[in-house]
Image (cartoon, rainbow, N blue to C red):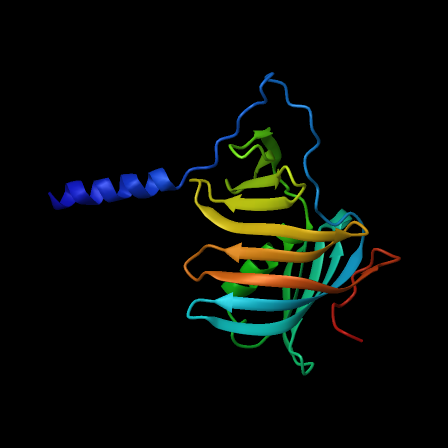
Length: 223
């Protein structure tokens, strides 16, 4: 009986972890461009970030991000309102470099997850386009399969709002990103919800965005 209940519980969990179903249009033809909220040119962004964690724990920091999309280069720093750098790292095709990591960012896993979150926000999926169509709420969606088996859905609803969903290979939702208030092709507000062992919500409000003349790797530190 105990084994049966365990199997039933596993079946229930697996049933809950399924990718949203994509439907073709009424005519069966798909004619739309995939939503593309990602950074097109080298840019330096400054965001006010509010982090909300379990237990109604909230904290506010400044995030500085340098993005060079052509080389998939990301350099970023988390800074307190007083100007102390808590975390600074970069990621490129050559690998990851952690320049500074103070608690609670001093775990290699935390640093890697943060870099992956930042890439998910600013860079397009690296995987192949697997399917495109419509969700049950009539949102347009393009689904990509990443090399590690994860799935990335890039969605645009009927109001024009863009959302990204990151799912595990088994269909469990891992990340959800909502882009809001676009101005001059730059989103003024971004929400990232992480569904993991340690859930958190990041509210990113744009303070400044500056194009970078040359695609050179520059520190994300405030001058």
